[in-house]
Image (cartoon, rainbow, N blue to C red; front, top):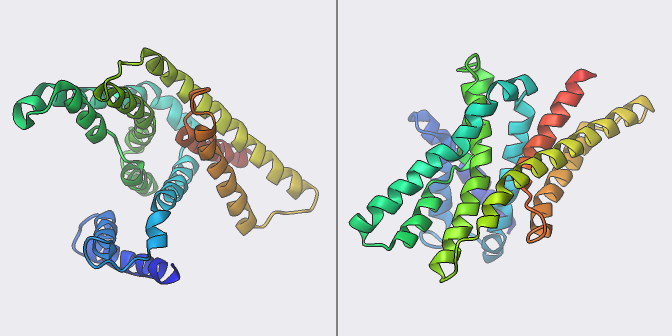
Length: 267
């Protein structure tokens, strides 16, 4: 496993740097690394890595979302509230409708199969969008118009909406019927994820401040471990509450990091 991790890290960084040199996004180099090292080309990765690949991808996504939350500010979120909400479902809805209308004509699919395909392809990948938007915010591009913040917030909400649609269309394709209660759970999932994440972020900030006030300063490396552990728990909470209460773990992670950043900035 260690050899596989070394290959992924070193070859991935080298390919990303190569793509950057020829003015291509770094993520293309990392995608090519996975394809080349994977089982369908060179097959250099250990089977144990492939077995936990889903967990590794989720861990990487959580780290990306933490970075996104730490880059957002409350005033920016207030400024992009309504546009971000519109971006979370309007583009995806148009894409899915387009697939439902044209995929049966072009690909010979049924309407339900076209809806499933549309819900997959309409999803926005935070792993692609978030790093780029954070980079634009750090460079100050479009920040006066709050464009990166709007796209960042909209992409985070988009996943909740599209996942519900995908689950509904998949159930219909398997012979079931549309579950309208799942759509009612979308706002509950968003609100609950933001609230739980914000409370967690405030709690972490209070813990760090209390330890510092008592002359027991928490080292930076320990803070990173605590924040990561809390983020992983919030992500796992979505699975624990599945079937009980709609909850978005990804939004909770962003809200936690955002609340932690805002609370830390006040002191």
